[in-house]
Image (cartoon, rainbow, N blue to C red; front, top):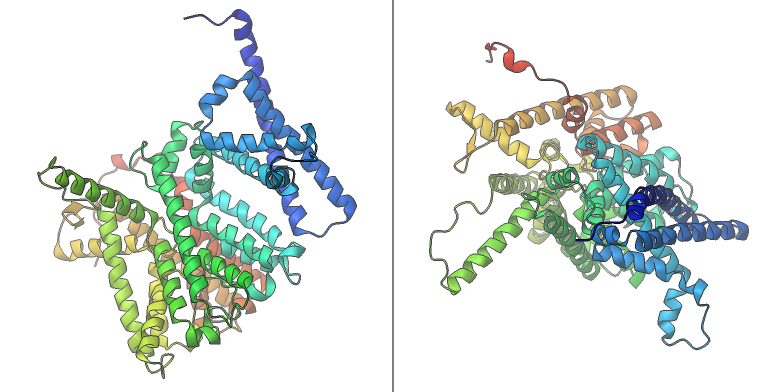
Amino acid sequence: MPRPSRSTSRSAPTLRRIAQILESISFVAALSCLVLLTVYVGFDHEQAHIKAMRLSLRAIQWIFISNILFNLVFRFRQTRHDTRWLKWIVDIFMLLTLLPVLYPHPENPWIPWLEQLLYSRKFLYAALTSYSVLDISFMLMRLTGRRTNPSLLLATSFLLFITIGSLVLMMPRCTYHPISFSDSFFVSTSAVCICGLSPVNIAETFTPLGQTALMVMFEIGGLGLITFTSFFAIFFSGRQSVYNQLLVRDIVYSKTMNALVPTLLYILVFTVCIQIAGAVAIYLTLPDAIAPTVNERLRIAVFHSVSGFCNVGMSNIPDGMSNSILMRTGNSLYVVMSILVFAGSIGFPILVNFKEGIVRRIRQVWRRIRHRNRGSEPLHIYDVNTKITLITTSIIFIIGFAGFWILESGNTLKGMDVTDCAVQSLFNAVMPRSGGFMTVSPASFMSVTLLLVIAQMWIGGGSQSTAGGIKVNTFGTLFLNLRSVVTGTRNVTAFRRRIAYQSVRRANAVTFLSILTVMAFAVALLLMEPDIPAKSIVFETFSATFNVGSSMGATAELSDASKAVVCVAMFVGRVGLVSLLTGALAMRRDASGHYPEDDVIIS
């Protein structure tokens, strides 16, 4: 094997330094590009400002192209090793933006439509956006490779996007009329934390561009920034450390490193497919009186599909899900929205386990057909987490469905036929667990119904889902722990499996902290808003802390200081107080193993 020459070995460090400098410049250019494009789209500009921004974008274009060409010419072997095929596509699109410079508009183009596409500003801006997102994703994943605390990284990413979102929502082209920064920050926090509370009317305040920005926040808040950046950084390129992949594996619940990319891709493809199917179903079931034109119908369908799957609960229909036309003719739409919210709240680990179980069953059937395997089948296709989640969810749903129908039969359901009662009970059994959509204001519910709704809000949906609450996994583990205490069993068991001691401890900690947190926020709001009824304040606090989004009408009446408290409640509820405390305090040295054991009297 030939050895590298001395001149090549000397030039390698120099090329590496130049590559690092270009990467840093490219990262700054990527950030600047996204800011410029956002300002370009969101504001009305004078011709001189437009010209200056276009020149700046052209300069960024040349920075990106220089970085690509340098790596291809001087570091081709390393680039080929680090780059996957989708990254090649983005780079090629970026290089194609050079065509207008190298070969001006031909008089007789071979393919007219292709010439119009490649020579258009839309193609240039799309290529710049794709390259910028990819470049920023690489840098963010590189930061996680430095053993950044995952909990603090998640919290910081949410804070970053809340701030960016609040500024975007204040742009003139995003709103029909100006809104205050406090309202914009509140809506941004609610969207990123997938809560749904809003002091302004979404349909009357935000333009289609503003509603598109909200949908982007829904997706980022529902799936998480790390999931998106992981997809771009790992699936588009192979330059990831083992720590990066371990971090992402824990986030997307991949059991092996080999299954990391397939699992991540499965989650994103499932999300996209469900949202597309939901948008089509909503488009077909939406009453004509609400959306008479195709564009309005499509915009409402996509917005509600994303909002429903991400369990946000925001609506761009006038009066939301309580619209009088929907209440008369929208039963099919209510069923579709219930399915979307349930699909988002069940939890990605459950979906991954379902996929694994289905694949295993298909393989078993195939082996039986080919007579390759006649032995015993595995006993545990679905893990304990999946079984606990599904059983607990089913019990809570049945109690919520039957309880709402029985309790509200003489109140909000009075005068409805059996079908309407069933649909409304279904809708109001699913939504309080995190969906946040409302057909009837909770202020009209009976007091005992409010207690049922608050209990559902507290429990929430599945772990690692778009839902809030303490999670059904936690609630199920608490019940199993209670059963073991009452029956005198030493271990917490379920389905012939012992529940890990750390899981039981964490479930107790999450429950205890959730009670303390909601009490603290409720007391603060009660002191700050003495004129608002206490029942409305308590309901608002539960809704914000557990990321539900339902309200008894108190949101619009809150002062700016109270809105700030609610924003903190939504943020803490989304990130998780246990995760925040663990991220801040887990590095302390544990010396408890050296202490003698003693008993505490528990009645």
